[in-house]
Length: 182
Image 1: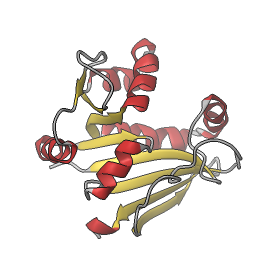
Image 2 (image 1 turned 90 degrees about the horizontal axis):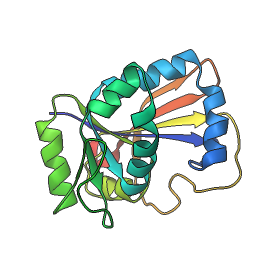
Image 3 (image 1 turned 180 degrees about the vertical axis):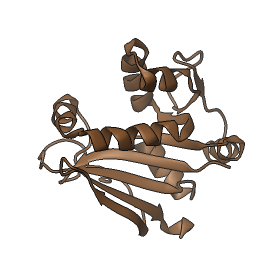
Image 4 (image 1 turned 60 degrees about the vertical axis):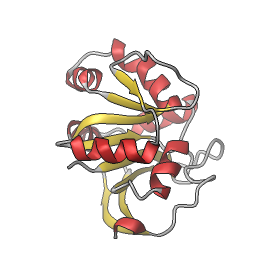
């Protein structure tokens, strides 16, 4: 049985999205951060995504080349959306029916992990249903000041710290286990 790992990259003030934001964070993707991200990707046999992440990734990844691109492009993706309809591109399947039942099934069928990049409505739902095994935040050493904050619309409850690690670029990984899993 696989774990559901949710990973998000955020600024010190909790901002997590936008073109200018991503331009800033890539400056901090030192070799050890890239290695961490590679290990996370290769620990998964499928991706879980909400509509926005799916659309953003599906726009970028198919045109990329290399080991990471080959892996992510080939793996199955499961998309939670109330507005998308099938067929989906990029080896993706729309989750139908009860979300929590579908994700429990995916976790049971998984020999590795199910990884969700980014935080949004989907994250709120999987946290509420106790489906998240690990929440990993990469905190970048800058204050962005504007944009959506990582948990501005969520009530997450208590978290148990599993790991804290500092990378060469000053990025900090904080890995948590939601209270329901503690």
